[in-house]
Amino acid sequence: MRIVNFGSLNLDYVYRVPRFPAPGETLGALEQRVVPGGKGLNQSVALARAGAEVFHAGLVGAGGETLRELLREQGVDVSLLRSTDTLQGNAVIQVNDAGENCILLFGGSNRAITKEQVAETLGRFGPGDLLVLQNEVSCLPDMIDEALARGMKVALNPSPFDESLRALPLDALSWLFINEVEGAQLTGKSEPDRILERARALYPSVGVVLTLGSAGAVCSLPGEAVVRQPAYRVNAVDTTAAGDTFTGYFLASWAAGETLPVCLKRAAAASAISVGRPGASPSIPMLEEVLAFIEEAES
Ligand code: RIB
Image 1 (cartoon, protein in one colour):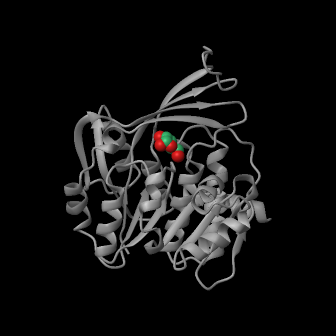
Image 2 (tube, rainbow, N blue to C red):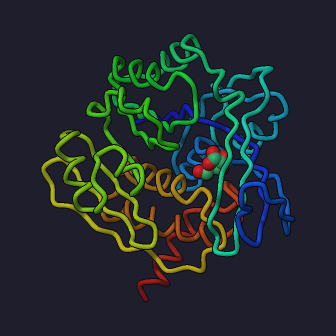
């Protein structure tokens, strides 16, 4: 199985703040950093650090060449990554003392992907290959249609959630990764088990993974009992990219043939480690570290 992530790349402008400012208020930041991010890039870094071979497809914009280099250094195949004059996609991220964040997203280059690029890129893949997606790029419906027409499997993290997602053929996906908020928006339910039940009914053949922050994660596969994974306790420094890390680690483990409980355990551990560190992609651990973390937690 080849894995291609058609995903966003962002320059993350990260500001550590004592609290989030109120409307009309001016508040001094305690620290500022620029780090590689974007849900797509974070997922590709997580896939690579978890040991998977991954192609990252998409667009690097003006001012974003360091993002291509970062992916290359991580061992991600960037031969399908194209360039555009459009300004690099970026995010302004405030992180408070509790490790919570507020993210303002500017799509830029990530929204300049065209149908032609989608056809050209996915034309290189076929039955059994896996397409990984989030909702930060243009042409998402075309990517899904093209991949399904080619017999590819599709894994989607519908984040950030918007109404356009309802029109997608979600029931034809192989994997859907949602958090509680996205789950409630998709299913109309608020309690985790009800979200999962409803998602199972709406998308009968899809593997649904519901992440629940400090309450862990649950996964429902068609025709199988629900598998639950508790969260690992860590001191939260910055939750940015926790979901991307979870998705990347889960899919890399799945592609490597691991069982569902192992996939969930590695994803939860990697995500916990990333929450204990600042930044998006810089916070994503290597597989050896994740395995050592699990061993210590279980000893
Ligand atoms: O999921 C975290 C990511 O969301 C950040 O890296 C930021 O770029 C936004 O896309």
